[in-house]
Amino acid sequence: MPNTLQEFLAHDTQKAADELIEAFLRLPEEKRAWRPDEKARTALDQVAECAILNGNTAELIQTRTWQPGRYEEFLRKKGEMTAQGWEPIHALLQENTRKVIAVIGAVADAELNEEVEMPWGKMRLSQILAYPDWNMTYHLGQINYIASILGCLP
Image 1: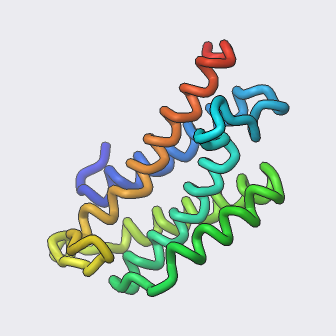
Image 2 (image 1 turned 180 degrees about the horizontal axis):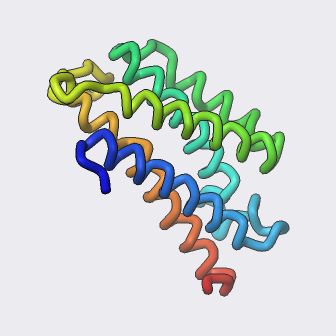
């Protein structure tokens, strides 16, 4: 059982990644890049987002600095990753999830209330540590919604 916030978040981040992968693989292969509406996102695009942002969040936690142009770089990389398909996205999700978990575990309790300047205002480091778990859980729900439309939820 986790004793610290960092241990809890590290454990739940891995759990969220595992559940995200499971939900994605539950979709029929021909529907993984399908969108239920013109304005909706595909499951593949959503997993690519999580894969990339886990790495970006690890870097943010380590440097405590938001890099200018990060959003534009993210959009470019997400488009490239989505075009490559599942295998590279899956590999990056696993790699960046391991990376962010290690970084989360290395944060000292005394650092949790430190503030990081973000484009939309300051965030406590504890909030940033929680982001990968929250983001993957959010997209798990989105992918399960796609699965519910397709009738492939267990």
